Length: 252
Image 1 (cartoon, rainbow, N blue to C red):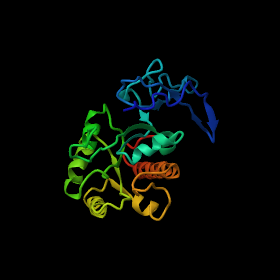
Image 2 (image 1 turned 180 degrees about the vertical axis):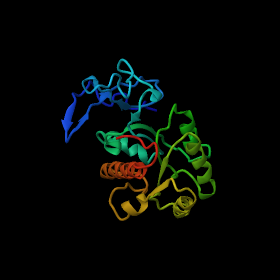
Image 3 (image 1 turned 90 degrees about the vertical axis):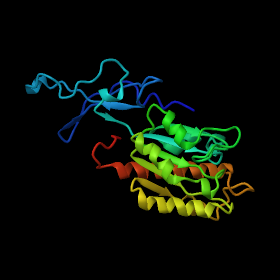
Image 4 (image 1 turned 90 degrees about the horizontal axis):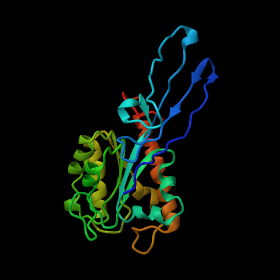
């Protein structure tokens, strides 16, 4: 498992007045073991206007914890099985999948959703979420190719990110010729009617009929991995838009 992106931006920007508004961001680096993955703080010298103290007091130095910052960047966790590992077979696949957002990837061969995984026995998706210091605002789940319909316990899976404060779950449907895939996809869509914070990302429909797959019709060619990266990025952007305007939504 990789750590979250630890440097969102380096240095400081100078105040720039625009349309009567001065925007100034003082950006910080987040320690490897820190409880957050990025953020910003703005502290203004308004003494010329008769204001003695800044409205927001920024932390000293170039590191900060989540509770020291009044705003933060969206944080994303991506959990996938061997299909998602296709991102690691193209140049910059992970960066293409998440763009400017702070992200953790846990891509493991043989992962199952909640049932014990097949060898080499990676942790299930809920186990990954429970183990993270913070799973972030959005969790992308692309798991199911090693499952059977009877063990694909979506409600059990949804309980874990909810308990950890995740605000949006993005669940990809499966593109597979396996007989259980249609049942899994139907279960995912039905689950979205019970969980209003579940976003169904229809990879099955998006990739139907495309030449993005190797012979098993599950795993990806390089062009398929590029397509998956773009699909992840678009769905993450959609999830962030869904959070915009909500109380406590992450800053961008």
